[in-house]
Amino acid sequence: VAVAGSPCPPVRVLTLTNGEGPVSVDPDACAVDVSGTTYKRLLISDNGDADAAATLAALDAALGAGCAEWTLAGGALRIWRTTALTGDGDFGPLAKLVAITGKGSNGYSLYIRSNDALQSLDGLARLRGALPGGIYMDGNQELRNLDGLAGLDGLDAGGGTNGVSQQCPYSVYVGGNAKLTSVAGLRGALRGRTLPSRLDIQSNGVLASAAGLEGLVGATTSVTIAGNNAVAGGMCIA
Image (cartoon, rainbow, N blue to C red):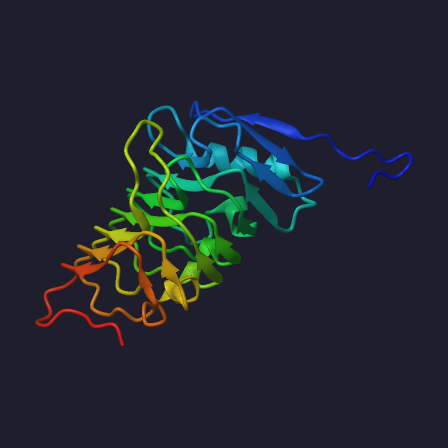
C-alpha cells in the first residue's frame, strides 16, 4: 500500500554477469523473481565469466537493508561450480532466504553441484516450507551434511526438462559427495511423502547412515541407496 508522500520503491532489474538474463528484485515485497531468466533460476557460480561473490553482493544491494528475509519466486536456486564458497558465513543474502516458490526449467527447486569448497548448507538454515520441485546435490567434495535444509517440510516433483530435451528424473538426488556423513537434514522434506519421481542416494563415499529417510513413504518410480560406504551390509532405512 502506497502512503502519500512515500511512494513504494521501484522494482529493480538486475542483469547478472552470468548471461542468464534479467533478475527482478522487489525490495518492497522482499522478493526476487527469476521467471525472466533463460532457465528459470538464480545462478550463483564462478563458471566462465560468472562471479559468485559479485552476484551475491549485487543481490544484497538490490534487496537493501530493509529486507530481513526474502522469497525466491519463478524458478530455482542453483549453486554451481563455485570455487570459494564454504557455506560458513559467506552466503550473504542467501542466509535470509526463507522460501523458494518455483522450480527451474529442469524441474528442480534446489540444485547444488560441483562446488569446490562447499562444506555446509547452514547458510540456507532459514529456508522453510515445501519445495515445488526436486533437490539435486552432486559432486560437492567437501560437503559434510545437509543440516541446513532441516527447515523444509515437503517437496514435490523432479521432472521438467534441462532446457534442451532431456527429462530430469529425480525428486531427490544426492550423489558423489565424497565427505558427506549425514542426510538427516532431509527428514522434514521427506516425512510422509510419496515422491512423484526417483530418490537416489548413491556414491557418497563415507555416508554410513540413512537416518533422515525413515519417514519416506516411497517413490512412484524408484528408491536407490547404493555405493555409499565400504561397510559390509550397507545401510538400512529404519
